[in-house]
Image (cartoon, rainbow, N blue to C red; front, top):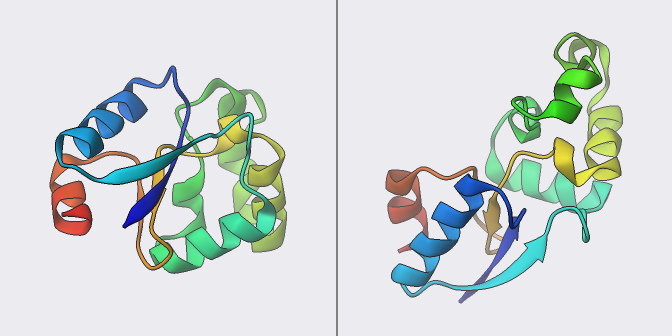
Length: 118
């Protein structure tokens, strides 16, 4: 099994997740979230597969999120508008995203990775 590892190379959380994948023998394809930002359709599939609220896909601690004032704007945006916004800029997306097509993890929590990817 090879998972998609959608990440930003300078992100410390992504580095921790990548190290965990390597140490646990999980094959992955690294995808640079800014150079190859997931499309609206890809994001919609990841979101629906994850079972998480769409809001969780936003990098709420990022500068771009804060500078655009998204905390207040997201509540009035449709799901389609939110997905378009996420697809417009990889820096708005919470990372890393790991998926094998049937499962999705968002961010890095070691316990969750152990439950899902081993």
